[in-house]
Image (cartoon, rainbow, N blue to C red; front, side, top):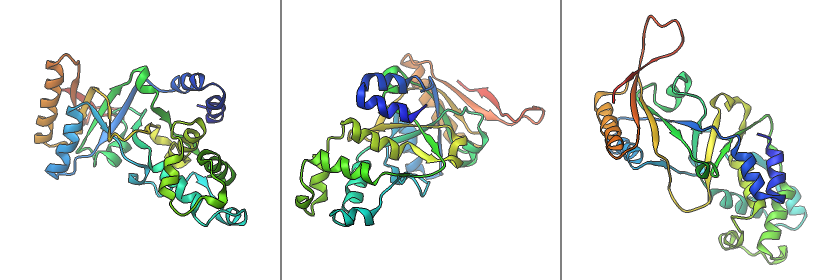
Length: 277
């Protein structure tokens, strides 16, 4: 997807921008989930799957130290133009933290690095989701970049315009000023998307997509279509996944459960998929 084109469309024709962006969202996306052996933590993950929910967090929850830092802010330049030190950065990061995200992958259940990174070496599970057009409104492709983007003027102009207060009277209460920024405005959304949906090219093998919402919910509705237990997933976890799958089937959802198996005679670098229910 060409994010430059998307950004231009958000400012001229938001509906066309949405349709353009959604055309790049695959019908199927995958979520790799770790099971750490802590019964209470693992049960939360099972419960989310059972309830048809994907957990939403903030960018600060993620494992990349450069997460949420795609846009560069020149504090020296801002100070020279009368901005209080750290004010733009504080408002900017508070604004971005107001959005919730969830990561998914376009890669399939046969991605060995994803099993290793995010499903604790095949002990966890992977879920395949099929998304409706309405759900795709909240899903964005991650843009993989070589360098960060200098955005001092963009951010300062956005903040100045959105809160409708002259710089000399902004004051110290950053929290109240953030509340005055309209989270649904096209320019605000663009800033957030550039921040949350951009990573260094070294992560491009993950083919990541992100659910991004501006509401206060901690979850996003999503019914699984297939569940894949890791090849080293323990019997108790497989039993729990079987229970969840049967509940879906009994209520009319055609969810299927498989377990990944190693076949020493398979000439391909792929695991076999054994149907459980």
